[in-house]
Length: 281
Length: 281
Image (cartoon, rainbow over all chains, first blue to last red; front, top):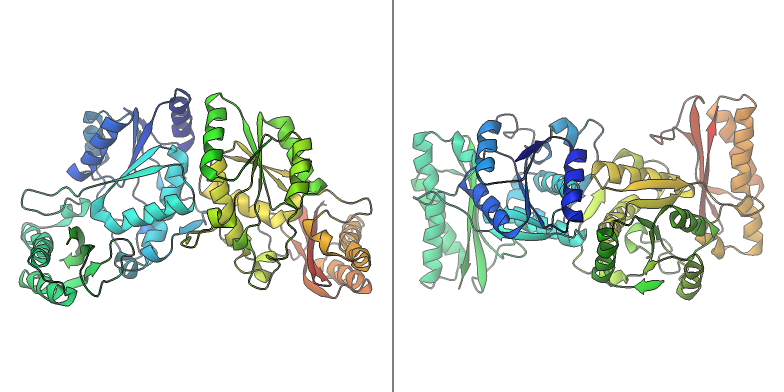
């Protein structure tokens, strides 16, 4: 595995792969890798000739009061994990390379970026879309891999790819969970033992909501009331949102039918966690 | 020359060129071609293995009260001209293909889009950048060709290419003029004989300003005063701007030194014309 810091160098290597007709798969990450990331990498490894992983903590997707500075950076651990997965190229650009002082472009993707996390993290998805556009242009992969845990992000990227005509196919891979159900997240590292227990209530609330739907409940209000109560019982009081939405538009549904997305963003101590699940009636 | 309406088809042809290691040059246009466009095409023909020209009247770059609907559309004339220049592919997508109903992405490029035309045509450069990002992703050329007549546009595209890491080099080609000095423009077709005479005052004002600088004048205010007077004498009264600006930032300069850009946007009847020239002291 080669570790590459320069976009120009990365591009010239990828160009060589493409001249040989090889398929390039790309997994963009912010590092602090866990089994969720590694599942994406393994999938890329199976499906592509060359696998490129990027580690870049993207400053544009953090708000001024968010955790950009303390976001976990564990490069040598990450590198070892990716080496084991037989990744070909690890792209690890500096913040200065990707977002130099004079940087000013921005990419917006419209309505899917507005509700849910978009409402509580203004500018977040613009930052995601902008840096992903850059990464896609640098790596020029055939396939990109994203996790369903960041469901809204996958919708934003889908719009980006479609509206700006990127010649790239996206694969969305199901959320990987700890044995007890907690969705894998780099931010789980922030949690104390006690917080770790409380954090479990997010996935439990989703399971609970899903069960209520399966049992025949069709009124989102009633389901959400119980999901919120379950979170509160576990001392998770600060909820950015607990919602039942249309999985395409991400807008709240007045009544449950077809497929819906249950989605939660809530704070456990100083850590903001998200989780979601799709339910088909 | 093949005429291609489908982005997918275009992409598959270009991919074939690239697999053969051929260099692809691209000239994006809105059609109603004149010698300015053809100069870009000839340059691409000289420098590249395959030449792609697009004709697309981009609705996103027109304001609601602008001339999108009446913009000249003369496809068969244009096609004949491009055939003569031995263009390989003419990309002629429909508005629905490029900007379908659900389209919502947008690309902004920051401060260079704000002054001059940016101020008088809100959203114009966002529309330009967004559709150029699409065209660049569809055509994936090594080289793109733009005319200096749309000077601010070349700056916007330069930022777009740099900030979003497009693997594309831009060539800016000097403005082509009629024998009497009028800058070639598709919008010249709108002019009556009488207006055509008045329109000449734009290039004359630029020549006049340039001469004043060459003669030692260093105060932009004095130069602009005379340039505006010259326009008014020719019954060109509605001036969006007559400016002396820094050619990089496009901001007005308080004093002339190094290289400056003289730039004019003015209305002749119902036709908005622009012209500019660089002056090195």
